[in-house]
Image (tube, rainbow, N blue to C red; front, top):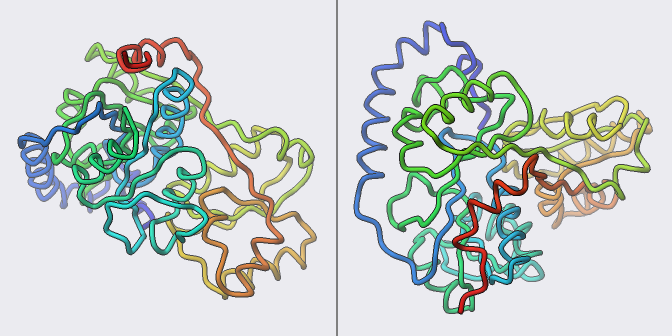
Length: 334
């Protein structure tokens, strides 16, 4: 879904009218979060966000899984598998499963780490542990009480922040920020923006650490594109973030064709993008998350062949801060 425009307007009449419903939604969410949770056989790190929509949770989950693996642990990434038909629990095989089965994010995760898709998160945690994982990084699920968390980090897109600061459906928040942060251990702020700084100040006033990260695209891929114009397409939480990342890497003009988050590409989409690429002569670029869905029909395969996939990783401004946060979980178990 695309965020309604009024979610970014603090004084919107519609937001004010919907606020009483938002108060009820927030109360229900907080009551649900307070329920007794099941315990996983290994530690669980939850990467969530206080709002709906994409903020960078999946790249953040990979960042933590990478760091833990470097420290000698054996992480598994656990997620619901948004957009996939499989309920799980199952271990994702990127050579066998498709995005239609397990979701786009799971396929990207599975290229680097053991990845478990499960609607029932405790069952998924059990499968991960049985497969040799000694720590679980849960991609989303902060508001889900079914599995106790050892460490929780909330992710916020600095350019969007909390929108109008109201709770669903009046705004993007799942519940008021402060009670959510009381259950979290840190905030991860992705990118730059005044909206994000407001959130960072609020979190710092609660004596919670703020991890600052930025997307950095693979220099081997974007290097040859520096100074050039490109035709970019993606279906992520905030598509403009992809264009901003490319611009910061030295691309001159990014002509963006945005799609909704987790968009399922059709032949019409593919034919339209290929026609525009043919007309403009611009290189087509996209994200890993979108590329895993370009398969099946001849048109989608042709779009995949014509597209340059730009991997991007999150890089911390202060790596030592994340190291300190992960210290109790980073050492190799005895």
